[in-house]
Amino acid sequence: MRRSFVRRLISPSIIVTAVTAMAVAACDPIVDVRGHVPTPGSMEKLEVGTQTREDVLRLIGSPSSVASFGDSVWYYVTQRQEATAFFAPKVSEQKVTAIYFGDDGRIKQIRTFGPEDARDPGMVDRKTPTVGKELTVLEQIFGNVGRFGSGKK
Image (cartoon, rainbow, N blue to C red):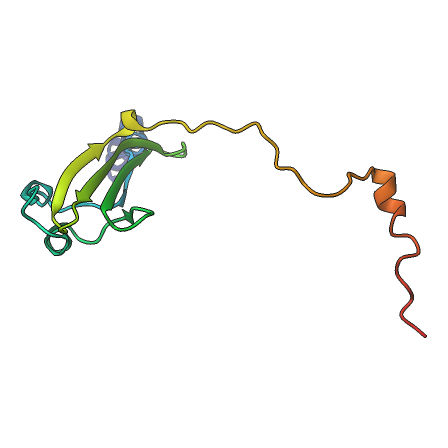
């Protein structure tokens, strides 16, 4: 009696259902959020013309990057990636918020950039000129023959 109960409990349909459920659960995407993640509603509290750098630091934190020349622009970068199983992660969301400050230290402008605003800089085909003579393989091999002594005098 006990044996037939165990057989009914572990039937092939239950095993197939369990394996299918595990396979579906394994395909659940792994989400990775990188960069600046503002608390909900904090970006909406920023006001152009009234708030200073200190107010921005207090509300949303320090920037991901600052403009190369001076600190008139602060950049907050956010990126969300999703990876399924063993596949390479793909960027599902990317956003850059730029906060421009005026000479008085107050917010002058706030702009948000997405992937559609990105530009490909392209490759440059020029070559950097070098000083000297290009040597062939044989010149490189035989060029050092006799240059170095044995070190004993």
